[in-house]
Length: 476
Image (cartoon, rainbow, N blue to C red):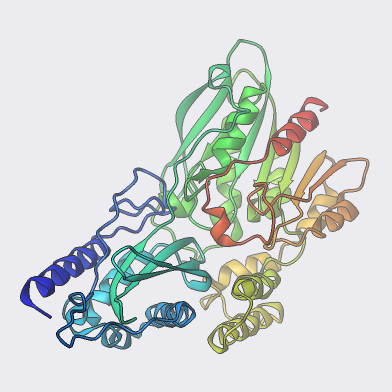
């Protein structure tokens, strides 16, 4: 390779490595990561590095052999798994000599940890797509799912099929409010809620006018969620809050304690610490508003699981259970991971080992064979102990308040059949039940198999969910 070509290659590689090392890891690609990946901007992609030799001439130079796209996809998948497993030296050695000079094991480790640190454990590879560029290089984009997010890992191969570049970035997209929101129909006020660890930021969406209105408190699921329940470019709770406020309801949403404060799920915490206590505070705060006539709890996922406990402690006027598990939360994890790992049509040996590890920890929780200071499945043992002592359907059955259950038919995180378990507990006299065949766990409409990656495609909470909540609240 002549000097100018090598110099261009190293410059491109340095740009790529610097981008990866700069912390371009939030779900919108900004340089700094917020706990839930709140979008704050859209980056410009870095030039893709190449290691193309000078074009072949009649003076004896040989042309590159055709590459096999399937082989490149396989290699990109294997290199990505190696990164996730911490095999940085192996990945560095796979690059051409020039690329390896820049993408050293130390730099790869720093880049990977920085870009994935707030997304939780590696889950699976959802997809790998191949394309060929106009300059003869080859690109494979591997879609990687984590417990708390998605990243696209872009591998560049030279004309001979040798890896020469790496670029890690989140899926792109910007939030757009749904058509059912009329921002002129309500006003939004910033509030704070007291919490033992720190004050929690909150937003109150209040319909315009002077008359009394019912109020709703939105309660998050698992994870360090902000008040909007931001997932990539999407904002599930903003959609719900503004959609309901447009229809005449006061809605309070707030930053979760594990998002706003120095509190982690691996600390000595219970379901009350991470979900219930702050939701009760939010209900009490919403009741202080002069115009609010009644307060309902609307919990999503783990927040729906906790909703009966919240409603009982806060004396709420009713509860909405959105994609809420009716059974033991920990029992869902093997099912969820088998779904995620199998999205590409196969479960590798490494993925099966992960499933087996998860299953073993689930069995330990089910059998009570763990200590409260032991970390299991990303939570402290005290958290699982508190859930083992709580039966959400039994509490729901004892409450004398109306309930609405809304469940997506494409939900792979909570079985759609759980709606029947809630019906058995709450009954038809107090309960209203809606099943939506096309909706996933985030209440997004779609088609085909649901996946974590699809959560990060721009979308909004389906209008039918908001309309049915409106109808249920209006009938109280």
